[in-house]
Length: 524
Image (tube, rainbow, N blue to C red; front, side, top):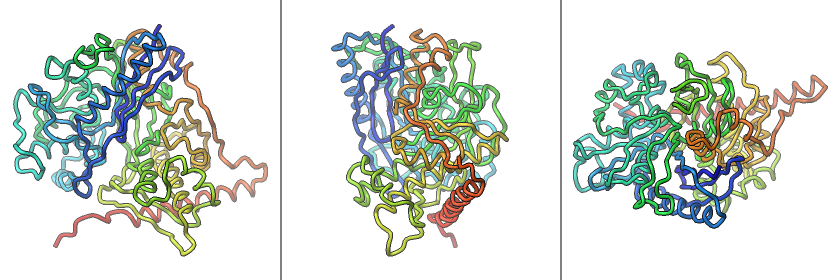
């Protein structure tokens, strides 16, 4: 049948990954992205660097496939969501750096919109909350005259202006760029912008007017599985003519790549941040306090149920997990490589009362506080780098519990298993901590790059590499599973373990309270 290549345009880097029809990872290439921090709370990427890294990694993997005699059938794209790129369709030039999802520069504007009473309408139509995390206020900031930014001229709103998330920037370049490139996105990415009515899967004129976004500059919204366009020779000669047939935001792609095809199934991806998604089926629920409702996927004519079949998901987002490990490495120098994290964290029995709240870019679910900031509490003279490392690992487990408990309360149904993936999921002690905190089995996917696998599956499903969700379900496998440590036959021992677990979590909640609202401006 051939192989499928997925482009995974993440926050810290770009990878291309090849998957064969049996679901095995064949080839992979990776390039790290430069992180730009022009001011406190501002995080940006260079769109040209993103595109260059896509070209380089795709070329690497295409060459590997050619050398191995593999026939590439199609290409899929998954991407960091909410990040905004703005460019000129005529010249192909990006007009500003990409504003990254973690960026906090529009926090005050979100407060203003809440104060003016817009939140209920936005929550009802988009399933989201008013937070600088999402795309609309970033776009508004870029387009508003007089906004503080380093550029030579104002951005002109007209027929040549193109606005999109990272997937649409990559697709446009892949399919020809200024010479006929396709300007489109999929339903999952559109659902993260604050501009899409997730009941109709169309751009909302009311929301576009509220944020001052020209609807004609936005990409067309297509199903997640289906042909978007073909790769132009000018973009990437070796793959010219191949269809780009699957696009999904990274967390929805991970839910798909974890084969969470049935309502109630839950996955957590521990990458730069931690993102927990629960499949809730085809009926959109009423908003759940502290959580987001998002489009999980739209399979279009590739659906095995009915054309245009859409699944929704409940989502909780913690903005920093892997980013906290990077901070230990790059900011504090406690580790020199991420692989040192586990041996250091497990060199102590616990964090000795130290808690780290990695609210570097505010707190996400279920707190939604853009003014929270990172905190370390519980330090003593005996605290060491190992205790800090353990506290960071603990924080990932605690943040996951925050989200899962909000989900279980929202749908009145406890989860039965958690499937995990992402770079930090390689830390074995994290699997056990999550199992203990959640009191459910935790299974780690056999392929860590599950976001890329999901994009490959969506593309291959559209092009007939796989025939159904049932076919894909048989490909999923785990490489490790942790059971909660409460299996003692002695009720007293079980009760004692639960008490220790809950006491640790109570300390986490106290630490969260210390971090909240820290950066909120004081007004006379």
